[in-house]
Image 1 (cartoon, rainbow, N blue to C red):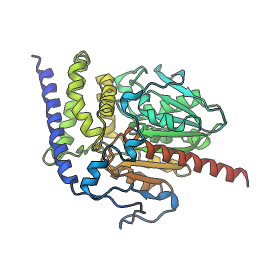
Image 2: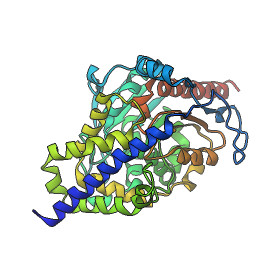
Image 3: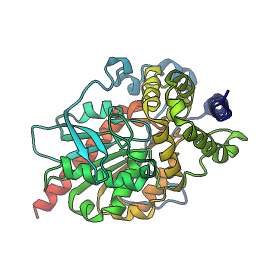
Image 4: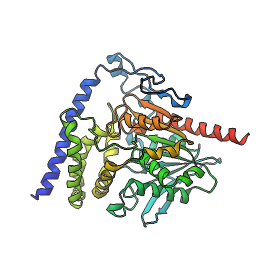
Length: 395
């Protein structure tokens, strides 16, 4: 057997084994954990900002037996159909956006009958535009909605490996705005994970367009930087080794990308337990895990590894200053292992007017895990934007 291939498979197997150990450890630690009711964050290192800066926790029941009996019937499951009920089936008018380096970005647009903002959804790493299934349903008719596949993801072409950078994604977002939003129409940007980083890069590289056209931003489960030392929530000693081990895994995958991509069945089996651990909180529906894993497996290995490299050097904390005048929502799950809640708290600290919402028990894929919460917060964001615009026009 080829040595490089053997190393890659062994590394992935090790990561999967770490996943199993991590899940067991987290379950033991969470057995006695409870969450507070809705409150304002009063940690000694935080200052009290205005009403938009609420730190929201959804209430959970302290009785473990009651938790188990409600696990599949509570509001966050009752409001959500299973993945088998049509995830990714709905699409709008197809649009292709061509970037200045020749990449063709696949998009679709759902127009609203009434005038209002255009909401652009920017998905995360190894996902595609169909991961926004529940948000598409929640906001249908409220605003014109634009969904697009980031370069190398979904139905979009990839470009070159050296173009797998967060800055390049920011430029792509500028092209999408130019191609899909009529002049004078306000824009709301909703970015998840790498999509949130894309918004930050856009703010840094296109401040004029941001100031002239963007009325609101939602940053979901994302990071302003500092991901190089990520432990992925793994217990010691695996967590201590993860920052050194994980880049080696991805570099080995990159070296054998073509071979890996020819083995989708093997890739799917390997990826499923990793997806379950790093992307979701407890009790995630199996259909959702498979849905997310399938999107990841469909992403070319070169694209996956290329953007992982970009995350190691991602640093857009300073770029957040450009978002200060913009109505901003920050959301994260407190079980997020890819972009832990501390990263969202850093974003909120840099944007004193932002509304920070932390969802107890939710992992990285909050749009699938907590669609009712995300839909409610996005609707409230649009309401605040409309109220602000009405107030300014009435002066």
